[in-house]
Image (cartoon, rainbow, N blue to C red):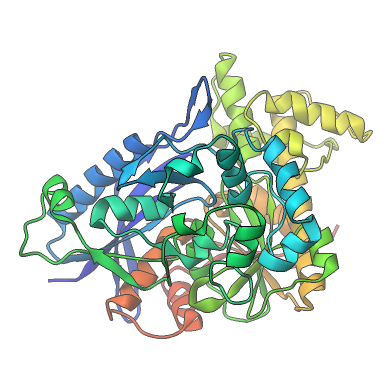
Amino acid sequence: MTEAVAAVDLGATSGRVIVGYVGDDDITLRHVARFANTPVRTADGLHWNILELYRNVVAGVATAARDEPGLSSIGIDSWAVDYALMRGGRMLGTPYHYRDERTATAIERTHSAVPKGALFAANGLQHLPFNTLFQFAADEAAGFLDLADTALLIPDLIGFWLTGRAVAERTNASTTGLLDVRTREWNDDLIARLGLASDILPPLVDAGTTIGALSPEARNELGVNAERTLDVVAVGSHDTASAVVAVPATTPNFAYISCGTWGLVGVELDVPVLSTDAADANFTNEGGVDGRIRFLHNVMGLWLLSESVRHWQRDGSVVDLPSLLDAAAAVSTTVGVFDADDARLLPPGDMPSRIAALCGERGEPVPTTHAEVVRSIIESLAAAFAHTVGEASRLAAKRVDVIHIVGGGSRNALLCQTIADRAGLPVLAGPVEATAIGNVLVQARARGLVTGDLEALRDLVCRSMPPRSYRPRTT
């Protein structure tokens, strides 16, 4: 009987359950379930449909457990920053979506208590309006924190429902803004200065820690009998942390782009970069697996494309994405390049009109057809990614010889080639399922199915799933 592990990978638009098999020379994935992750807007704001997500997770893991007698563990990763408030083991309300706009006044209050520069020195994080500490400040002002005894980030919430044990895995905890960037422990001094309660933050654990066995209630839901061992193992629960584990790098001099809804662009370091230049450039120092630092900057990512497609579909257009990308590649006229980091692109809505307005403001050609809008998005993302790689290299004083792009964006040949052209560096694309692979590898190492440091794990990925190469074209 071959031992297997299950990766629960929850993205901002969809979730999946994937069974992974890891040997000395091979990684094999089998997709068990895929489901939509659609937020819900109510009178009080935008929320995640977390109960529907959990129902789909349970159904997917139940299928995996039924089909795989050798399934030994489950690992959960998701997007960062969002959380549920709990009391007595019960969820007090549906978690807010990070695109909800409730933090506007909370940011001002937070910075009045701890100035922006001091905040960066303490937590090493870039300023994003939805960072957890700003959401906490909004909940504190509304009186919600007074009602809670625990706050659980999304992967930790799923893990709690499966095991009954409340913990905070460090890679995701590092995105809250409440972790000390140097010690990687909860920053009690900062928490006190912000007027927040530290007692709602659960104990920290590292990726690779066994959180616990399934609770009797979870066993019943999953159809797993009491004699069978099936543990929940902490992985790099921030999806980007898992994705970076699976970058098939063969040199330390690499930059990565984890490209999905967001484009996370940066380099891997052993120590954080806390310079004024790094703060001014809005770079972040997030925790990685094995104590590494993910020094990176968030770029808007393929959200720009998916939201444009949704807008066209709402208007009645039939959109075939592969055909649209082919048409975009064939555009021969110069298209406008806009700032892909502009805050006006963050909320849902009419993305093509916003892009046209941004191009017009810069005196760039305004895209009019669907193909021109898509080409403008691709060129603008590639320009942002290439610039960010250069900035990461400069700020960290780290040479970059190659760019690895993983995640859904690695399938987009036009994007990969355009990044190579604009960066003047080779781009290696793949694997697409990097997050799930990283999740699987951390579990496999915890179970003793594979050994070694991150470099050994990456070598295994490279041998199992060689990336596709894009060389910069001379123009």
